Length: 625
Image 1 (cartoon, one colour):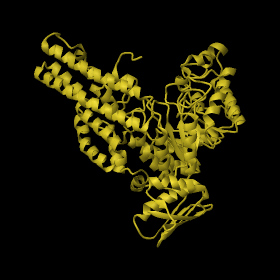
Image 2 (cartoon, rainbow, N blue to C red; image 1 turned 180 degrees about the vertical axis):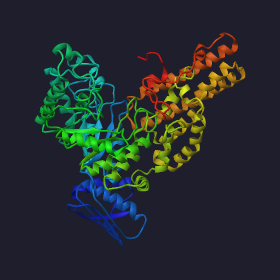
Image 3 (cartoon, rainbow, N blue to C red; image 1 turned 90 degrees about the vertical axis):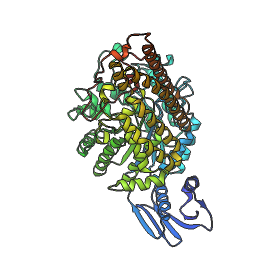
Image 4 (cartoon, rainbow, N blue to C red; image 1 turned 45 degrees about the vertical axis):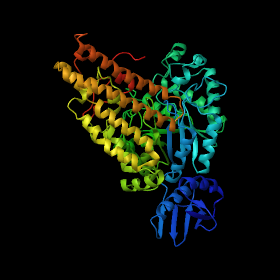
């Protein structure tokens, strides 16, 4: 399609050129006339015979308006669309610290989609995955971004009306950064900096300077969440016990001084103040008491209220009020639920997002963003976040939102079919799991990695038709692969995962039953089935590898590949043990002699859950160091 843009185009020219490739249009003097007007007020898009008009306030509003026009022009006819932005800042935070580090090209791809969604902020969460030239071990072999890479992303984002804000850690969550010997003098516990040491603040000045240098933004997220052992490690040995509120404020004051000297406005995760005020260290403790003198001594920084757990509007309303009582104009951070599993939990993400953003609008919260964490290996590709980013985007421009509206916009903005993406939700919303998976079960991860001979979760799923459930996903994913060409590799990976799980999910239960009944024919059949399972698992590994390398830097894949290697080796050992028993070389398979117990640790499974855990707790009851 040829388009002739006129009017206030100077500040958006380069963004138009970027999006022309993504959305198949080109600028031409004889093209469809689109007149552009920048002024205060809502987004206004108008189309009539052979001409159109887009009115906007912020640059990001133009790109959303352009997307709305391109989407609706295909339907033909005249139309007028008015949208009132609900927030001043609305965006996303992607995790680049849990093994998966998106390539520059993938960040650019995300930015293009965000632009037409109308999301105007992107944070890249980097604990140590950014270059600090004076510290060669900082992010060593972790796929860290160079200064040039981040600058390239920032300039690209700026052309699209998107602000990139550096997002780092300056207290806790620094295990990978502090594990090297250079950090021995600034390490309190394995993941927390030693507060009060001059060397600590020299270190922080270096990393804050390096983290902010590539970006045009004068804002920075300095982290400071989940410092559970604050003041209880080497700090305690050196200084004796101190009130932890005082330690927190003392440290934050020093860090804010550094950011202030660099001309930066900081924000922090808010949880530590609430945890320290709670009798049991809980963030969401409604009875937490924060002393008034502590509130008055909190340095000048914005608090980010992160919450992706509650589906009741009342809770969000209460907690936003609690943040306001701290003297903060809080930022809200929700979540897309791509973490701890191998597939997304859309049910939980949608339920929590709907509740949270409805309240944010009612309470006048001005800034919101969606977190895209990758905890425990970044097994779930971050592209699966897109439907929830679209939901955030539609809430950012409408008082209320319907699923149909989200689906239609999603198709235009990403090229993906919403209903096909929703199939991925069924990997964890299985028999035994309650609707929307609000307890965050991750059976697809559990059933993929758990050991065939030991089966720590076999008792949890006993009697549930898991093989059948995953078998039913196969034709749906075959269709999704055809429907979503841009996401073909991702759906091929999930298609192969469904094939593996349609066999592996219950094979440990079948093996135990055949052994207990001394059914040698069934044992021989299972032995043969394990051979084909090795082949299909190997194919899954290859498809996963191909998908990873198409999206992420290579560093971090070794963690996932070690998991596949362990899985394949253990299936082969299961074959070996069965064969030895069938031949009579051994009289017992001790792993199969053991009774299968419910997996109750580290917490009791709630009703409507079959289990949720991380890799090292899934594969063995022994110490995986």
